[in-house]
Length: 414
Ligand code: ADP
Image (cartoon, rainbow, N blue to C red; front, top):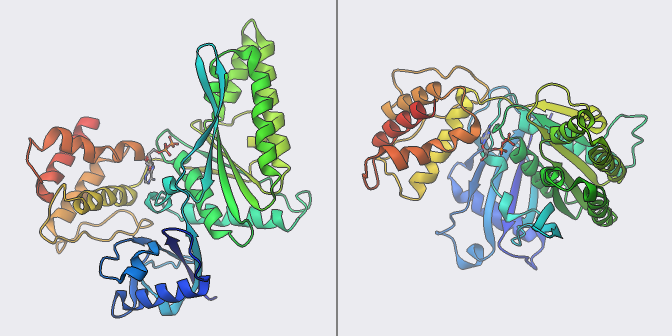
């Protein structure tokens, strides 16, 4: 089977040049990028300082994806000549989210946020999430297949496909981030099917936080706006419901309390509305839950994919820390003497400490081993804590000093 690789050309602004001209420009750039035409997989190139103005004024970044189907032996480098390239050309929306709010006597309550895709806010989110067993890649393939089947009018009663994805697992394991990043990737990679996209994030928390008697009406109002958006069949509409268990909780609590009717009515209104917008072929529902046991909600029950996201493994921790260190080195917050870090295969555990590894790589691996049981969210805070608390005021600390500080920060976090 011919393997392929995705390459995204992110433009600074809309260009009148045709897609083929833009691709030709990037192809000739990539050809001289490395003499042998080898590139790093899963990387983002955005430093074009050596290029001519005509290139730098056009191109924001080039995103190199992974080879698909994913080979068993994943090396880090990519031979462009060996694969079919899928090119995607787009600009990022810079407007940021707009909010759907409702005023009351205490102020405003945010019901939902709308983000035009592909958004600058979500750029690089996908590339910075690390999961073993090709979880990310498989979810993207599922998502693409669902939306393709739907666009082609495949009958969901014959081939079961509800266009609902549920990610569940402990807090801080990247569920919300992965949902958002998936929406962005689908929008970029399905341009030929859906000309643009939007991510609607429903704020179910705020809906249940107060005045239940009004909430039923609020839910209906909010969804009538969403339905209008869905009418544009060329728009990919991703609806994100974070922590869906809050719906089930609100209902269960009210049933056991004295005033059951309002809360039950709101939850039921919400579920009915979700069932209705789900009928639109261009809608994908993304839900997250911190609970691992079953949630008694029909639409979650019928999810096509229920993916568990657990705490990161040692190789995933290594990748997260590595990305943090690269960011700090790039910004000259820490310095190093040309040290290169070991490359790690996320699917191969444990990472072996080899004698010929450089000391700083060995040290980082040991820090990763000490960081098991910490969530992705905590891991991404460790470098900050290390800098704030454990470098003793050293300006531009050396990498080794900084790694010692990270070690202490991990200990503190435990
Ligand atoms: P959740 O929804 O599961 O509570 P979030 O999506 O809010 O988690 O993630 C919190 C932070 O932790 C984000 O900055 C995210 O990038 C980071 N994070 C969590 N898991 C991972 C992972 N596996 N790889 C990289 N970053 C992660």
